[in-house]
Image 1 (cartoon, rainbow, N blue to C red):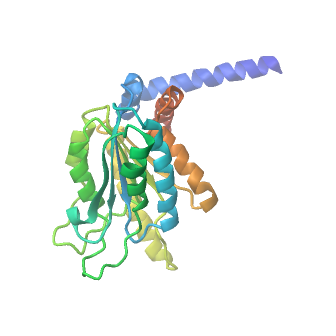
Image 2 (cartoon, one colour):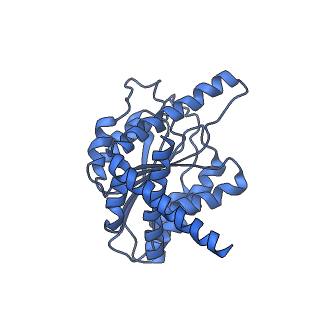
Image 3 (cartoon, one colour):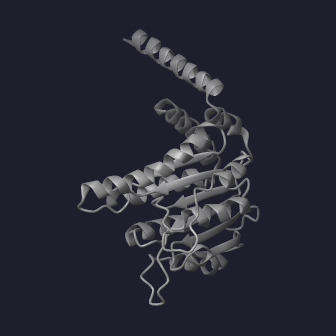
Length: 280
């Protein structure tokens, strides 16, 4: 039995090595992740939070508490800077994006409480405005704006990935050029943490909703596999009891602090990219 286990383990390791080598030479996205294992520790972060009407407040509350908890680890670290915005507020394009936090990590707990924690607490789901401004989900505009501003940085987007600016005078298209330019610096990466879109009682309509979300993911995956950008997608569980723990885990991967978290994050990203390549 021990002999069979040993040979099985050796065989599995050989198979995994073979698969890794194969995709390293045939898939630019996988090769990029292997090359980035020795990249400098990330110290610039941007967090975008979708507050459009289709995002549940309970999910936002989980996001806010976990983001605050994660950023607290950087108190006193002058090398770390981060920016947080909410998007999907009333209005179109730049009017729908609100800057919440943008600065270097605070020097002490008191400063963190006033300049970061209390500001994050103000984030809430958008409500229909009395002014008549439309409620939008300006995902394409947001990416068009923030990608050039965060070259080489870590961008984490919490959104259902459903771009909607149809009520605005100007509609933005999928920002492929901006994504490719951002992706040219391999230290940068995009992380999308997304819930299931709000569905209806009509199966045909639900299918169209899910297809819109999937279309965005597939466009990004094509750029990823071509080595044009480092991008990762993580689906928030529908079960509320699993949601907070999942968000906490993904933030530990996306905003690593300890040496162990950094090593694990890089290993995880390599494995995740290989799995995506296998799935095609």
